Image (cartoon, rainbow, N blue to C red; front, side, top):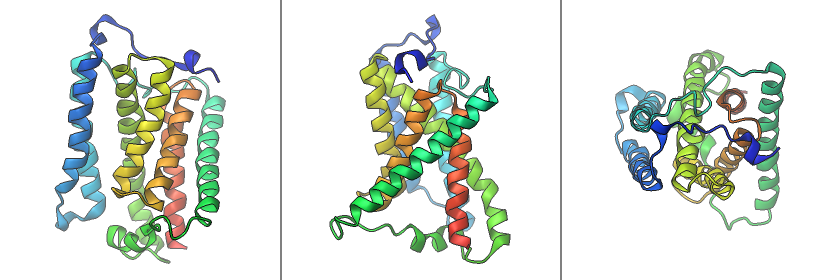
Length: 239
């Protein structure tokens, strides 16, 4: 799995902006990503607020991409060429994500109470309502969970990771930094603290980033894996 061979980044003249341009885009993008979460409409609930945040951020990202002459297809939103490879990539990401979280859980058992506990199950009722043994709620919620999973892959692995690379001049070192940094932002954005939850989500983001680079920079395996992981998480709350 050669990082240099897996790069499929757009090199057209229209996208030749300097590192400083991508740095400005990133500062504005990350600022919006966190500031927009200060806007909350209680009447529409957590799920639709989440979609509002993601769609707003998506609009900004799409605007900056058009300015740089880059499309979502350039970043990986294109039809996979090989179904088998896509399936392998999806299973690889799922396995790496679950394996990383399991190893982390074993490690933190030795660190408690040195790290803030995961309170996601306790906050799930606030976010999704009472879903325990409520399959009607599960099937009503899950399409929106999948949509949010789709948007997060576009934004975190598609836009954020590629913009970090381009800011650092698209070297192999830049790819490593981008994979790690986007995972850290991904984890912190879901918890906004250094806790068991933020690290767990960050590890999942790390697995997604590695899978993105290792399997030809196609977003669909990551989208499928993200949807599968979120489905398993929701099922765990229902059962």
